Amino acid sequence: MSKPNSAPNEIVDLVIIGAGPVGTSLAVLAVQRGFSTILVDARDPSAVPATDTRTFAIVRGSWRLLGATGVHPLLEGVTEPLNGLEAVDGGTHAFGAPGIIFGNDDLPADDDGQPLGQMVPSADLQVALDKVTGQITGTEGGLTWLKNTRFEALEDGAAATTVVLSDGSRIRTRLVAACDGVNSSVRSALGINTDDHDYGKSVFAANVKLERPHGGIARQLFMPEGPFATLPMPDNRANLAWYMKRGAAETLAQMPVEDIEAELNARFEHFAGPMKIDGPVISYPLKMRLAQKIIGPRVVLLGDAAHRINPLAGQGLNLGFKDLAALIDIMVEAREVGLDHGAAAATERYQQARRFDMTTVALFMDAIDRAFSNDNAILKPLRGLAMTAANKIGPLRRAMARQASADQAHLPSLMR
Image (cartoon, rainbow, N blue to C red; front, top):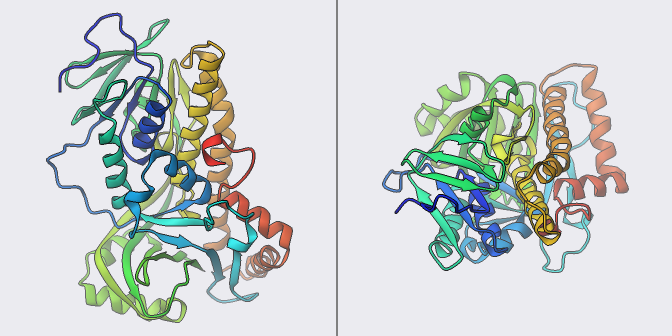
């Protein structure tokens, strides 16, 4: 592809660095709203994608946002409705009975009959978003998609900032959206520090076939070393995530399949029923990373570039979708009143809209992990009381359901 914006004074509205689910969704939604957009994608189209067994819990508000991109029809047959969440406190000193903490009945009726959320395999979501992105690339007033191209540097300017790319391109833009992941090059170029926490754990992840019907319920068993979760998938399969001490998950992932199955069933058959591995397995370290600020001069950080949180409860990608939904609203509102959507006033609005929420969710997930990942005889009854209250007190349960499903009136317009 030829280098974009060769005219020295041409300024585009938005340059997006990173083409994961957040970056591609932002590109589609920005172009739909008439913003000239360039998507910078470091992926090599000729390379074989890495194995990814993750399944995302796309909650109701995020599913609405994805519907606006046009990917819903492309995901038919690979998603599974998420109908509820069940949490069980395992180990010794048990207190209280397991049960669904909240489900579809705890949410207000949806015009389209949508459940709490949809379980979507990561790889299928990326393929669908790439296809939608490709459909608007190169069309009149559409998207410029630069593949196998990396971000190199930023050069500040008054009316625009210049993005320098690995192919030698220099793009002047009113706004840069950094969607380039937990090790964000844009964040590093801005000199933004992060607050990091290494849990000393890793997650073993795999897809399994179940014998017991899952009913669309995501189930979590909290063990002293961390949770064991099964997330519903089509054909009575599940995506499981097992939190283990660092090194144990990596070792398990290297074992023969029959040995992995024997270990899983010996530990968790009482909870999930008999399981058989269905496809490749992976492991990854569990870490939290929060950017100390999420804006720079004409730059905003979104998704993992701004926040990598504990994947407990599956809120990570949903936070990223909240980021981009808030950004779209701010860009549109600035344009409607004749203001520069990349100026400091707009980027400060973005930070005010997203900083508190992302930090609160990250710290809450961290607190839940710390509170439940032990076998303390004093904490155990208190945890049981908290879970019983969440299950039995209707207003509390419904409030939790609305928060978890991103189904609230104050959220950005694309999620309502």
